[in-house]
Amino acid sequence: MRNAMRFLFPAFTLCFLSLATSSQLALPRNTPNPNGITLPIFNDFAHQHYLINISVGTPPSLYSVLLDTGSTDFWLPAWNSSGCTPDPCKPGTFNPADSSSAVDIHVPFNVSYGLTPGSGMLGEYYNENISVGNAVIKNQTFAIANVPAPITPSTFWGILGLGSRYSTSSFTSPWSPVFHQLNATYTPLWESLFETGLVPRHLFSIYLNRQSADVGTITFGAIEGPESGKYEGELETVPVLLSGPLFTGWAVNLTSVTRTTTHCANSSSGAEPKTEPLTPDNFTIQVVLDTGAPNMYLPTPLYAQIAAPLTPTYHKNPEGNPTPYVRCALRNVSQPYLSFSFGGGGATHAPTIRVPYDELIYPFGLPANLGEVRGEDGAELCYFGVVETPGPVFLLGATFLRSVYAVFGGEAGEWRVGMAQARYGGGWDADERL
Ligand SMILES: *[C@@H]1O[C@H](CO)[C@@H](O)[C@H](O)[C@H]1NC(C)=O
Ligand SMILES: *[C@@H]1O[C@H](CO)[C@@H](O)[C@H](O)[C@H]1NC(C)=O
Ligand SMILES: *[C@@H]1O[C@H](CO)[C@@H](O)[C@H](O)[C@H]1NC(C)=O
Ligand SMILES: *[C@@H]1O[C@H](CO)[C@@H](O)[C@H](O)[C@H]1NC(C)=O
Ligand SMILES: *[C@@H]1O[C@H](CO)[C@@H](O)[C@H](O)[C@H]1NC(C)=O
Ligand SMILES: *[C@@H]1O[C@H](CO)[C@@H](O)[C@H](O)[C@H]1NC(C)=O
Ligand SMILES: *[C@@H]1O[C@H](CO)[C@@H](O)[C@H](O)[C@H]1NC(C)=O
Ligand SMILES: *[C@@H]1O[C@H](CO)[C@@H](O)[C@H](O)[C@H]1NC(C)=O
Ligand SMILES: *[C@@H]1O[C@H](CO)[C@@H](O)[C@H](O)[C@H]1NC(C)=O
Ligand SMILES: *[C@@H]1O[C@H](CO)[C@@H](O)[C@H](O)[C@H]1NC(C)=O
Image (cartoon, rainbow, N blue to C red):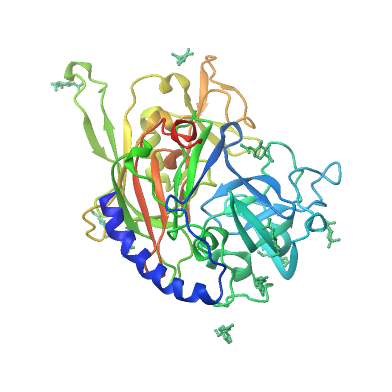
């Protein structure tokens, strides 16, 4: 916490002062709640989604959308999506004709999502009144997209992206009239909350809570204190990696992974913890902290080191790809844990986050689309939430982020991610519901 204040508070102060001047001219003025805006995040674990409720339009309608730090656009499915059966499909889709405040800004929307092939979507940007909790942002840009795949209860109905404005379709698509125009890209929703004075700080904090928890939290515009019960120890920060001069997403350097075994195979040596490195001395890879990704997606040598003691077996998923499973009994025994360290470059307070193995192993029968898998001996096998990938993009998704209280934010040239070890049980139920 102390370190976070040191790193993040000065940047905030400067930005707030400069913005205060311009906001008197252009932006609607609000009085920010010093605690920011805290909303529940719903854990749809069976379908590997974290969802947030956002209300859109006049009169407002509530939408439950995927919370995604790995992208930036906020979009809802169009009422006449080709995936709608029957057509129109409601609720959960958006029809601008039903909202008196929807304004078509005639900018095409064209996205596809990284690791999901065939996930491309086309649509159009609109400006709208969008509510986050009780805070209303007027004239916020978002998109309405045609969803081509069949829309079912297990697919998500839109995405709230929480990334960089230089990763929106409006900025990156050659079909956009403001393609690569730095000064014309729209302000993403999480930044609008700060720029319109609805929240005091240019950041947001995420607490997913444990695998089995129904609810975690997101706080827009503030960092909760340790008294929230959501983390322990110091909140340490690392710089976000830039793409050339531009902030394009929440990528950081992962500099080491170790495994600590508390109960050794050699029982005569007792429960003396033993820590072994799983990465070489000079290891560094770029990883994106991505709440929209259910698993970790890591280079093969690191995956192999992490998985080795569990002796996974591989079973084909519906797409025909071999997917690692481990014996479910491994969820119950006292497990070793991994420690992920970030930063490098001589950082003295780089975050180190412990991830217990039982948080990497899904319960039997989940995720729902894969169903129950058994070994040849009939033993229950459980899905393993670490995936090997050739890169170049590596992700730390929910199987990592559940172990963290993470703060994302900063200013131009000062983008940072803060991380502290999550404490479980500090949820929406515990202290937020008033
Ligand atoms: C969230 O939104 C969904 C879909 O509109 C709705 O069914 C659910 O009741 C909402 N939950 C809360 C807590 O508002
Ligand atoms: C939905 O309706 C809009 C406006 O009428 C139209 O431009 C769009 O092509 C339609 N989408 C589909 C998938 O039919
Ligand atoms: C959308 O973008 C893809 C590339 O990402 C491109 O192949 C496609 O032609 C684009 N479609 C439209 C209608 O702009
Ligand atoms: C929606 O936007 C319109 C036009 O900007 C505004 O007059 C209206 O009060 C807004 N509605 C809400 C609920 O904020
Ligand atoms: C809404 O935003 C657009 C830019 O996207 C701007 O041109 C327009 O003036 C804004 N309207 C209001 C009422 O602020
Ligand atoms: C944005 O920048 C471009 C050059 O990069 C310039 O031509 C254009 O006039 C600028 N637009 C505004 C609104 O400042
Ligand atoms: C990330 O790691 C690379 C390779 O070691 C290094 O060159 C770069 O300075 C690091 N960046 C940050 C922001 O730590
Ligand atoms: C078990 O631990 C003891 C004491 O540390 C050591 O002497 C012995 O060689 C170990 N056995 C194995 C199989 O590692
Ligand atoms: C990392 O260290 C190994 C030996 O410890 C060396 O072979 C390798 O070249 C080093 N890699 C880099 C990028 O420095
Ligand atoms: C693991 O623990 C659960 C309850 O926590 C129990 O239902 C299950 O039978 C146990 N499985 C094994 C293999 O011990």
